[in-house]
Amino acid sequence: MPHRTLLTPGQIWTPKNQQEFPIKIVDLVKSSIEFQVLNNKLDIKRCAHSLFRKWIKSTQASLTEIDETRVPPTLALAQKLFALRKSAKMSQLALSEALNISRSAVAALETGRTGDLQKYLPKISEIFDVPINFFLDGLSTKPVKRVIIIR
Image (cartoon, rainbow, N blue to C red; front, top):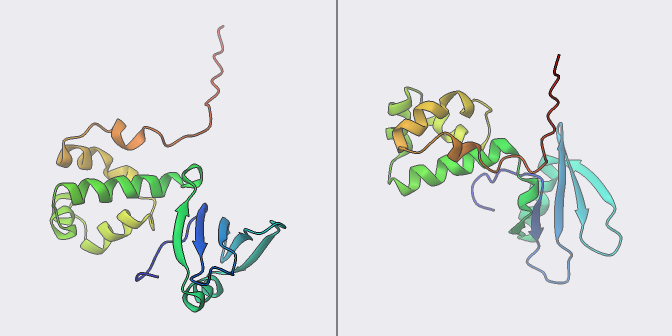
């Protein structure tokens, strides 16, 4: 597992030994992970984050698939920021200076470890010359119901 991979719902981890079943992360609940072993039973199990990471390391599992419908909005925004910065060949340090924040804060924004990304969207849009809608499009997979009250 590369340095510190962010574990998120929808990820499917496949052990190196093909005789073992892959595992899909179903949800993150406080300090534990709910997951399914992708065999015939599909029971949901739970363990601590640290135990799940130990399983990844001990089985040499690799991230083989991500169920895109389960990517949390914060992570989707983070992935877009990372892709923009890389395509502009900009370092985290350069972006941090442009946003007037620390380099480690940029790293946190790019990995979804903080929910502060929204407050920087106008400035980020300006820096990369993209509309704010670039970040907001496609974040909701559920239809939005609107109620209009006419008096």
